[in-house]
Image (cartoon, rainbow, N blue to C red; front, side, top):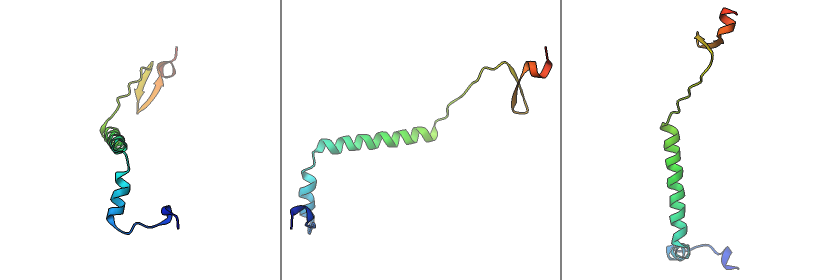
Length: 72
């Protein structure tokens, strides 16, 4: 049986596998995770104001052109 197909029988074997992982990989993974959490928090609690400059009047929550309401 190849080594890849063998199961891990004790925690020491798992520790050996994890120690082979470069610590830089864990740091990068942590930073990416932190950025994703920060992005989620920002997107959840931030509002964006939207202002639109139009030539018209706001009547009953509908914007109608002034020419349409009063004619020429």
